Amino acid sequence: MTTPRLISFVIPAWNEESVLGPTLEALAVAARRLDLPSEVIVADDSSTDRTAEIARQHGARVVPVQHRQISATRNAGAREARGDLLIFIDADTIVTPQAVCAAVEAVRTGAVGGGCAIRYSGRLPAYLRVFIPIEVWFARKMRMAFGCFLFCTREAFDAVGGFDPTIYATEEVTMSLALHRQGRFVCLRECVSTSGRKLRTHSSVEWFIQIYRITFARQRYIRDRGAMGVWYGERRPDPELIKR
Image (cartoon, rainbow, N blue to C red; front, side):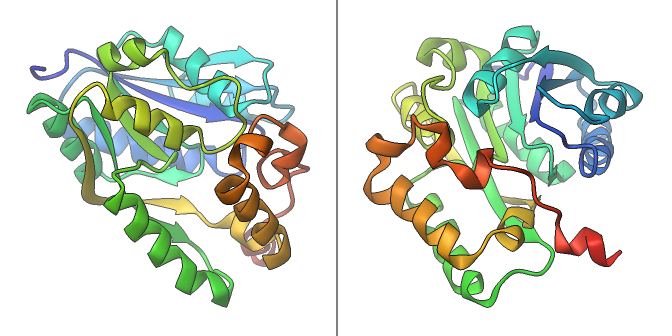
């Protein structure tokens, strides 16, 4: 692929008024550094707060959907995108110009897609300080993108049919595997920062159950929204925000 003609940043969002503004501000800085045409699409999935208003205030195009399902919401945003490079970013993720530029360079030199390194913002429970470095190492070893920053060419996205709309979690794993079959898939060393709020708002027992389900009984649970409570249950207040 040559240099992309247009880059589409696609952000799925559900009640993200507390985090979306900084995400879009960081994205604007990165886009200016690129000096390439770009657009930002916020796929607003059933939000009842100011998510759509904040998105529009920052110049994003809002695509309202009623899915309460991450894969279908990502796909809805991608359908509205006009770019030949799609970069999927979570609503609570702060990108850097370096990560975005590296993604563009990767596809310019032949990659069909990829991801990057991540770090979680804010205080984390002690047990996760051991687990997370292992998670990051394993993802890089297996060449899997994290959902908070996954990019691919439009051609590759269409070839694999987008994200699997039948699953409620780990859709980035399924997408990474599908993209592997389309060509070179890269894991960039550049890093983005994503919120650690769900790691703070859910107990170690809740996370153990969730990790067990998506690791050892994945096919049984990932198509059941009710079994993916960490992602689809009631939004809990982030202790980091309460302290402020």
